[in-house]
Every structure is written in C-alpha cells, then in structure tokens.
Amino acid sequence: MYNATTRSIEITVKPKYLEDQSEPSSDHYVWAYSVRIENHGGETVQLCTRHWRITDAAGRLQEVHGDGVSGEQPILHPGETFEYTSGSPLSTPSGIMNGSYEMETEEGVRFDVEIPAFSLDSPYQERLIH
View 1: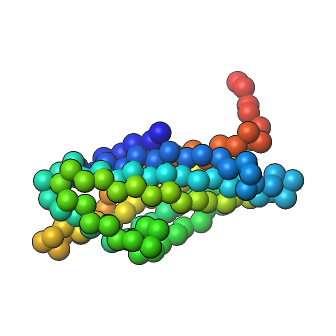
View 2 (view 1 turned 180 degrees about the vertical axis):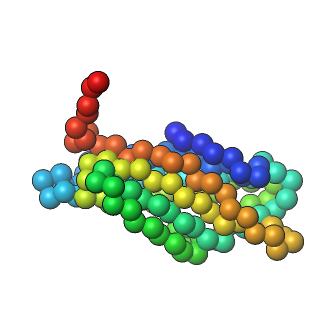
C-alpha cells in the first residue's frame, strides 16, 4: 500500500494486477487500484476534481483530468472515509501512477491533496538484478 497525507487528508492506494483482463501477447496489461480517502482533520471537505499522471515503462506520460472520482464528488466530514476502485490499462508490463485531488472546504477554500506515486507491476516485467 502507498500513503500520503496533505492537510489532514490521508490517501491510501492499493494497486492490483488483473491477469484475467490482461493480454501480454497483445501488449495489453490492466491494473485495478483501490483508493481510500480519510478526513483526519477538523473541517468538512468535498473532492471536486482529479488529476492523474500515468507513466508506462517506455516513459510515455498520459494525464487524466476530470470531475470527482467514479462519478461522485464525495463530501467527507471530520472522521469520515470514502473508498472507490478504478483501473488503468497500459501497453507495457509496468508503470507508475501519481496525481492529486482538488478539495474544497465549506468556506470555499480549494487545495490540492497528493495522491502518492504507486507502482504498477505485472509478472511479465523483466527484473534486473545488479
């Protein structure tokens, strides 16, 4: 698992390679990632937008921007948690993802929350030993 905390908002990400949806012979590799967002602070916040940076093993970068997550813009009161699962395909057997969520307080203050960088690894990635 991968964790990051910004302004008392903790983001935990757990990636999982999906063998049954991947076709290595066609350079198609798929991962699911589960995200847990926990509000450890004293103010209510709403997740407004997301920004993902997805880099494959060849160094190709794809950026994804959008409203909310999984069709929702969750509101998290102090002590509340929101969880969702999404996925990402790549044309290489490994990669890395990171990004940010834009949150807004009840007072209208917007701030970015870090999504920790996490590794997308498949059993087809060649391992190098030094």
